Length: 87
Image 1 (cartoon, rainbow, N blue to C red):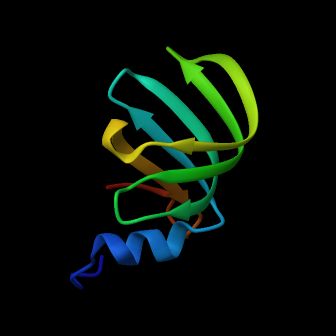
Image 2: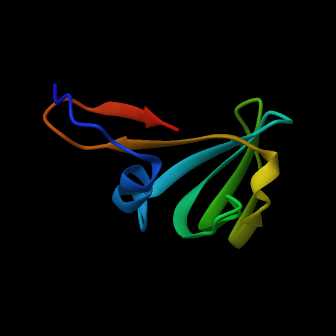
């Protein structure tokens, strides 16, 4: 395990173009490919699926999530040991 200091910018550099899970304050989850992010944490996901209580609600080609609604962003990395990273 590395003890290097990591920032949120490091996390986002690693996950751009990868599949992420974004959970909102209202418990809705969106799973899709991270396409864009701005300074207000507004997030654009592509190939996105919307879930509520683990039930698929809808599918979108592209979606914009307003940053102030985001509770967390999670991504899985394929390494020797798979880890779940949240910010």
